[in-house]
Image (cartoon, rainbow, N blue to C red; front, side, top):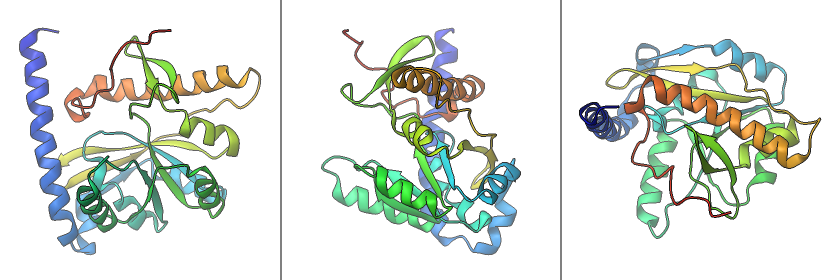
Length: 238
C-alpha cells in the first residue's frame, strides 16, 4: 500500500474514534423511541433462531465501527446482553465512567476475570454474552494464530466456551450509516469444531476461523477497526 493511502486510512480511523466518543456521550440522552429510526438490523433472524433453541448466544464482537453502542441490540431483541469488559489497569475512575456509559446502551457489564462459570450460567438462562474477539492476549495464556499472515497472541476464551457449551458463536458488528446511525449485522454462527482432533488443534482451528472473519471486516473497511490497538506486538520467541 502506498504511504499516502496508509496515512489517509490512519487519519480517517482517528477521526472516527473521535466521532465514537461523541456518540457515546450523546447516547444516554437518546429517547427509546428514536432507536427504531437510528438503528437497523440485518440478519436478525440468526439471533432469534438461536435464542429460540434456548441455549443463549456467544456474541463475538470486535473493536469495529462504534462497538460501544451495540448494547442497543438488547433493547431491540428484548433480551439482556451481558458483556465481559477487561478493566483498564490503574484507571478506576475511567473504568467506572465507561461502564456507566455501556450500561446506558443496554449492556450488563461484568469484569472479565475468571468468569467462565458465570458465563455458562448466563447462557443457560438463554441470554446473550458479548465477548471481544480481537484483543491482544497475554503470551502465557494465548494461542498463536495467523492474522494477516502473521501469528499473533489470540485469546482462547470464546473458543473454549463454544467448545464446552456448544452455544452458537455469532459474529455481530455495526455498520456506520451516519452520526449515531448504524446497521447492526448478525451473521451466521461460526462453525466451532468440538471433536475429531486433539484439544489444542481444535482450539487453533477455531481461533483461526475467528481471525479470518475479522480479516474480512478489516480488509473491507480498515479505518473502522481500532488500528491503534497493539494487535501485533513482539514476535513469538518459541
